[in-house]
Image (cartoon, rainbow, N blue to C red; front, side, top):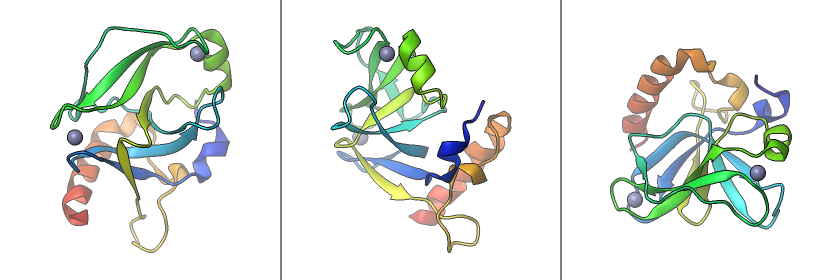
Length: 147
Ligand SMILES: [Zn+2]
Ligand SMILES: [Zn+2]
């Protein structure tokens, strides 16, 4: 379930640094607990129309999470990774349900605005995940609006 702390975070659109295509319209700035120097963006919905897996599963030295790199479908550059199977400590510490990560160097974040166009769109404003279809379609039309 949603944790209150991230409801006040901005929703960001993430564009690919390399080819400028939109990778994700529900991005959230995140900092890895294990390594606070690393800046990441995360999302809760699989961005499966914009990225694809490029490697086999691997783990890092810091923990036992099973990860898999993902690359931009348009230009093929690796832009982040998917947590295929989170390890127990991570599951308990970062339980915002975001298992798709983007490297900050691979994406250009753009803060989204709410319907009025005046305020930043916050995670608390987003519809719940069971409204996934509707949110997906509205973000498509927003994309065109932004361009
Ligand atoms: Zn882990
Ligand atoms: Zn790209």
